Length: 527
Image (cartoon, rainbow, N blue to C red; front, side):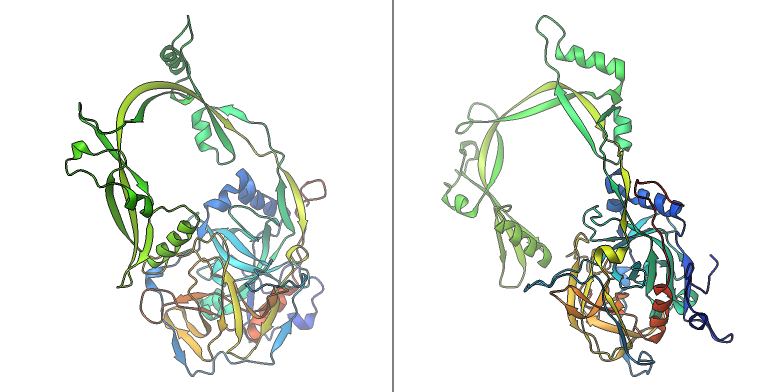
């Protein structure tokens, strides 16, 4: 893709701001994403259609978690401020609220895109303050594939949750990143600012259900339903089996006529001495198991309610914590415990239950219904007017206290998967005071933070001076890489490009980009 060295639609920018010495390489480049409303409209519908099926299908941006890099501290002068420190204040500040917990900013969300292999991917991002209230900050590798071409169908969804876009989707129009990332795939420039169009939503005007064949039902990604009716013998008429066979002959396997062999278990009282019995076990609580009578040594004489087996299952630490929560909610009957060696276990208890087993054939007709979207487009307005925008900071001293947000999802290198990517998480701490390098990614001056978030958090903002009441701060980095410093196959540090004057220069160019509304007041596509 051809690179343009001025931000598109940046009308009103002074010649002095645009001027570059002829012999000097620029700090920044910009690329078109979807500047035309028609392309932006189709992209928004691509992600929102079928009740957000494409959004739910997407997985986190993935890199080789088995090859987690280590950071090497340096005494290099790279990464020190290259000018005076600066701050740009946040916008859309909400009313302060009091909370002992960390309040999630309204500005954070996910960016979604399609990579060169056609896979649906996502990263983390935030709305950031801009002149035209239209700017998103994220990692450069969440916009540029291997530092070169931009991803397809790029959107930002603030407040994303389980396929829902509560404040609409914002389609990328222009992407801005560092010259070094674009030219050399240099992760010291792993950041990007994306100017987005006005938000877009689909206001569902749900169509009535349409009955279809099973083949069409299976292909449909939107809302759908099956209504099953058991076929009964008609007194003086056709039997259920006859109705089933006629329906199968007329409509074929896609018509929804089916026969099921139904097995039923009828609890038997006492032991079952006159035939070969069928035995099952029912899980009970530890207290119920302790109160149950011991079973006879002869299994033929076991009675309902006698003690059965116990089952011990080893757990990881994450599974142990999850089971404790489920135990508190009444979802787990067994005992969740930790032994003297520090290992975690789930013990389940069972009592005996005899059953008489019988089987019969029942016949059903399944009616398949789909509910196509009959949605109307709605303009949501400018991103910064809807969710606000975080401030921006550059050339700040290292050793800053920051709060980092993101949607971690990938497992640790050891396979443990503590995060789902469904809801945003956070880390808080003080960034390192040294510069760090990772040779395999041409990193020489990253800033670091002790944090165990995993990929999926890529592109999440590092907010300096975060006000928990106002839910605002200053973006002083975005999550770029993940590191295992102690060699235990678990991520314990994350790193970001250092935001210096060159980053501020890229931000300044993006700050002036102009974008558009995609649809008009009646949902019509605008030119």
